[in-house]
Image 1 (tube, rainbow, N blue to C red):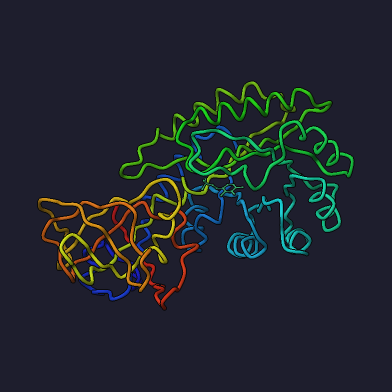
Image 2 (cartoon, rainbow, N blue to C red; image 1 turned 180 degrees about the vertical axis):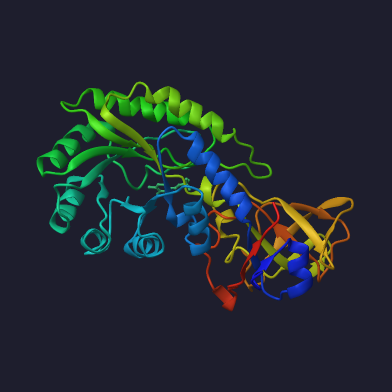
Length: 377
Ligand SMILES: *Cc1c(COP(=O)(O)O)cnc(C)c1O
């Protein structure tokens, strides 16, 4: 066994007694969750790399059947292409650094891009070869069940989509349609609704499109944040997509980030100090927990460890503080933990793979690079 691989978290703690936070990849969890997503979704699954771009996690997703990657920058394209020469990268953001689309196409063979305005089409058209490229027109759709609205910054109103599609076709690329219902979409009906809006727009077009990308947003459950199982989202999509007037070889695409990234990662942190019902940890809101600053869930499932073994016993709620000087470095939700937890114990937070490793900072000098593999289920 390589030294960064352990049978379970207890063994890791007994061997390392780590001072820094340790991020634990559970390959079996990633493989099972990815395979069930790819098997259940009625179309092509693109992984949204920004949710977690750790190369080990990208490799597990690839091994579990992901061959398409939704990238938001040239470095993301370069990372994916470097790991998996036979994978396809899609450059699915309507604004890019100057020259990035050109480099993505010339160096990495990227053929799929997105725009949401004529201004963006002009810029893109100067950088890529249009024949052989697919350009998605991104439509804004809002639904109340999305915790964060992904149509506030990007997306053209549905009424503007037909002319964007015609502009794309006129410049020689294949037009397609994309939208994003939101992130952490708590109601599968949001997809039914958005696909319905898309169907209404497509019906008015003089041509049939081949590809419709319904975006990401598939929600994951967290404590205090229950959501329907993925199967209900897939059923809603399967049902609604029958109304889409697609061309004969038509296909729908999705871009899950959270649903693929979240399940297989945990963070194991040490309790540095206890003051009554307040615990001070070696990781915080500037580190692995940064996503808790956003709307949505306010905590992760947690179990405590003492002397390398799970610690059970009657529980009480604790407020959890990070290691920095800053007042806001406190996790928003209280977390139930054994009432006698103390400094030197560890806490493992699970389901923490989405928007955690990517996006944390080294504020106050805290930044752990310890990522290990756990063989347990
Ligand atoms: C962030 C994002 C995603 C992934 O969203 P999740 O909520 O993590 O599934 C997909 N597509 C686009 C365009 C995004 O911006």
